[in-house]
Every structure is written in structure tokens, then in C-alpha cells.
View 1 (cartoon, helix red, strand yellow):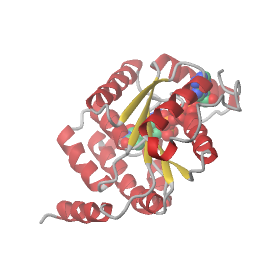
View 2 (tube, helix red, strand yellow):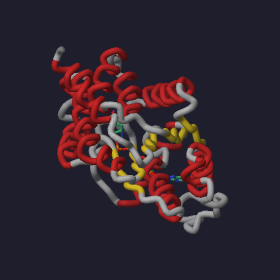
View 3 (spheres, protein in one colour):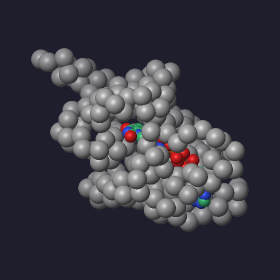
Length: 250
Ligand code: Z5A
């Protein structure tokens, strides 16, 4: 058995341990509103009596956060898109082992800002062979695939203008990260790739229009999550108006 298969087999075996929590990932382009909506969903789950943790990729564990710094600084870019994909996968493997798997096993729900679909879209768009990405994913996620993926869909114009407004409002003079400097055509191709992925797995994905107010998006997501997990959330009550109405864009 090759090393890659051995690691994959071990991680698959680990994944057969009981999973009690639910694993929900959020995907979409820059400025889609993923972080905003993850925080809102966490509040609603907590109000329904469900314990949830929030995490992100790349990152989420100390080692993966170190790899994040390297990736987003652009220092890995000269190695090429394939090696960037390897590093995203390495960060993911540590994140799954150190944070996601223990949280799910303890019964927490895990809300993760980006996961393996981002590799398929970003590194796939950059030309990395899909079969290579399949192999990396098998090793990195070890069977820990999301129970549900919320794709927040916005046009690149909307998303990038939100990111620019956020930088302006914070007075941040920091340079854009490795992926924010890509052309509008690249952002548009990524948007389509996300939509294609969602269409290929409709039972996992919920596609939400992220171009409306943050409250409206939060309500749509809550409806979709309740519909996906009726046993866990069947008695969580109707989609109540968000207490923080108008705080962001609404
Ligand atoms: N990447 C990759 O290439 N391969 C991989 O495998 C993985 C990642 C996992 C990580 O960046 C980068 O790594 C990412 C892909 C690549 N590319 N980039 N850039 P990141 O983690 O630093 O950034 P991001 O994931 O793109 O997040 P973001 O730019 O912060 O966007 P967001 O989380 O989706 O949005 P937000 O922070 O919730 O909202 C953005 C702003 O809009 C903020 O000021 C909000 O107050 C505002 N907002 C939010 N919702 C609304 C609505 N509905 N209306 C109006 N305003 C709103």
C-alpha cells in the first residue's frame, strides 16, 4: 500500500467513529457575507439549544493558521497552483484532526468558513488537474465531508465592493491578499464553478442569494438549515426576525 493510500485508509477508519454534531460549510466569493452569516447562524442554533463552534479555512488550528499566513501572503505562489493546493490540503488535514473531528464527536455542530469546495474552485480554476484534487481531498478530509454546504452567491462586483468598503471603513492600509488581486474575469469564473458544484450535488448544497440584506440572507439560511435537519430543529420555531436588524446592509 502506498503512503498516500495508508494515510487515507487510516483517516477513513477514524471517520467511522460516531459523529454526533452536524458539519456545515459556507462557500462563496470574497465579500459574499460568509463570516457575517456564520455568526448569525451560530446565534440561532444556540437559541435553539444547539452548541456550535465557528472555524475557518485556511486555518482553524494553530498549524493550519501558520500555513494560512504563508498562503495568503503570496509567498507560496511562486511554487505554482498545484503546490498551493498541496498546502491548502495539509492545513485542512490538521484542521480536521485537531478541531473538526473532536468537535463533531463531542456533539457540537461545526460551522466552517470555506472547506474543500474552495480548493476545487480556486485551485481548479487555476488549472490544477481535478483528479489530483480528488486525491488530495481524500487524504485531507478523511471522510469528514460536510452534511450541508451553504453557497452564498453574489456577483463579484457586489462582493469586491463590500470588501473595499470594509477596508476603507477600518482605515486599513494593508495590501490585498494573494487572491484579492485576481482579475474580475477570474472572480466570475470562480462564481460559475461554485454554482456548477452546487448543481452537481443538490442534496448537499443550499444556494442562497447573498445580494439582499444581511437579515434577509440570514432568514433564508435559517429556513434552509431547518429544512435540512428537521429532526434536530423541527421544534426550533419559525424563522424569527433577526434581533440585529439593520446592523448590516439591511
Ligand atoms: N482559498 C483557496 O484558494 N483554496 C482553499 O482551499 C481555501 C481558500 C480554503 C481566504 O480568504 C482565501 O483563500 C480566499 C480563497 C482562498 N480568497 N480570498 N480572498 P479569507 O478567509 O481572508 O477571505 P474570504 O473567505 O474571501 O472572506 P471575506 O472576504 O471576509 O468575505 P466573507 O466572509 O464572505 O464576507 P463578510 O466578512 O461576512 O462580509 C464582508 C463585508 O460585507 C463586511 O463589511 C460585512 O459587514 C458586509 N456584508 C456582509 N453581508 C452583507 C449584506 N448582505 N449586505 C451588505 N453588506 C454585507
